[in-house]
Amino acid sequence: MINFTPTSLPAHSATLITFEIEGGVTTPEEAFGVELPQVPLDKGVILSGRGPIWLFARLIHHYHPARWIAVHDPRIGYIVVQSHCKGRREGEVLAQ
Image (cartoon, rainbow, N blue to C red; front, top):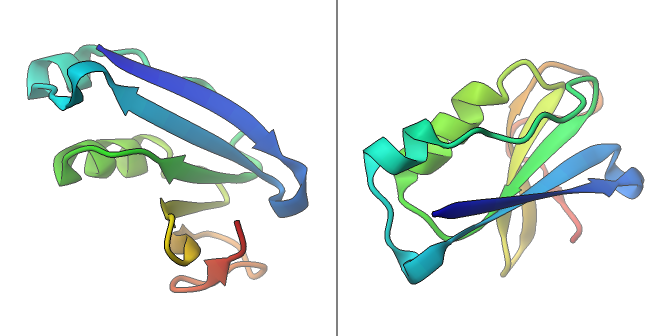
């Protein structure tokens, strides 16, 4: 099972979506069958969790309409990987 927790981050005008895979292992059937949280797409989306690259690809594809998307690297911060606005650029690192 995959648990998603959305949290508003007003300082970044974004929603942080943290996910946890129970037992640390998932399958494509499970990951593509789970309902993803609805978040405001007029803000950024930050993804955080430990999971396979294809799960991140699914999440980025799903939240593509958001103003921008970043992924969390606990060592350096939130890295913007997609942007539809002038206020964020791809490769930009945001403080945690």
